[in-house]
Length: 92
Figure 1: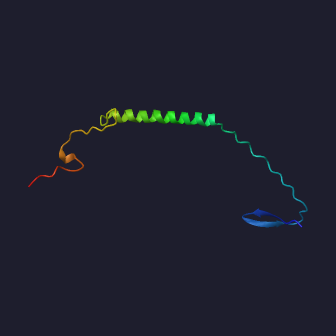
Figure 2: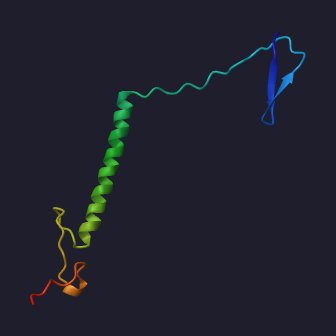
Figure 3: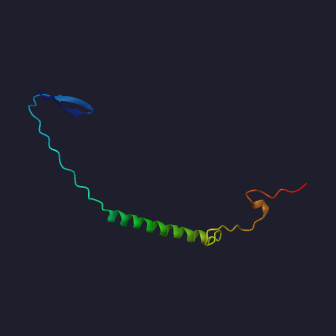
């Protein structure tokens, strides 16, 4: 005996009078195979774009004058009251 149910509005409802059931499943579309060459080419492209962006960001930061070409920071001269650490302690 075969018992067949279908889901209607989140509830399973029995279907009476069914003598046989035939199921057909479609084959999924094949996923294209990725070769090592394709993966390496893609990774190289992504890395090249990342390097270009980092170089561009580095040039923008250097254009502010706060960082030199080696990446070392150059602090501007400013009064002690503008220092984030406050003025130097004084001796009493």
